[in-house]
Length: 292
Image (cartoon, rainbow, N blue to C red; front, side, top):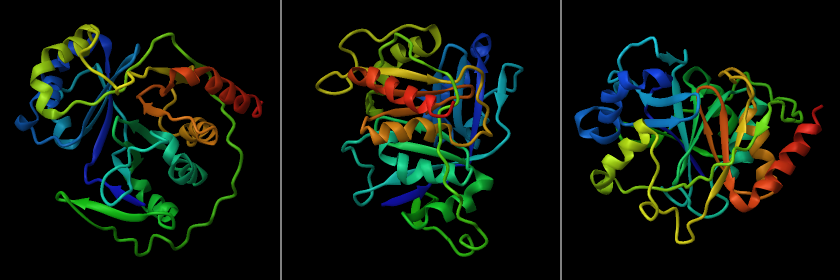
């Protein structure tokens, strides 16, 4: 398999709920008018606490400086696991489950903090730019490492990254943060960019006015599967602790349960199939209790 190191230098930021109106113009431009900006990577996640923005440096310039905008100190790079000769696989298992043991666990073993963003088609693993040499060393034995430069994929320069590193002693990873599962049901879907104008008004209503998708507007699949959330964290998690994603994803991978994983500025979230929620909670509670 290939591990692509994307060329974007990313910022992770939080917009307070009461300050969203200040950023609305910039967010609409980033989400719906990409031709009007130089931004190439943009993600917006709303939680009960805030809005989390992941955006490249050009896109970040579209957001106003404000007391309601908090920005993580580090610059982040996005990694993407690709198989099958150039496109992300869509076969099961999906989401973070398929990369839990090959990517997430080894990075945790080397005390590398990750920020996770699962999407309908692929998973992005964000790592601090300063950690990239250790990331490349850790994963070079399992993956062909490639960098995206000016839109072209080229071999990554791995010279010098394998010297001076000590293989870590592997230790158990019990879950140490509180878990909860809200009653909400979630859909995971994808939109063709060409169809965006036809649903732009609806999406803006959802983004800024807390509306909901009407029935039969967007579909996840022919079966219309629904997902339940497991929320990780009682207090804001911060960005320095290593292994949080691994604590959740490894038990799910062992149980062969697909999962999407979304890190936000304050908490982490895993989406699992609705029919699996009880077995997921049971597996994670077992892993939680082993660390007590």
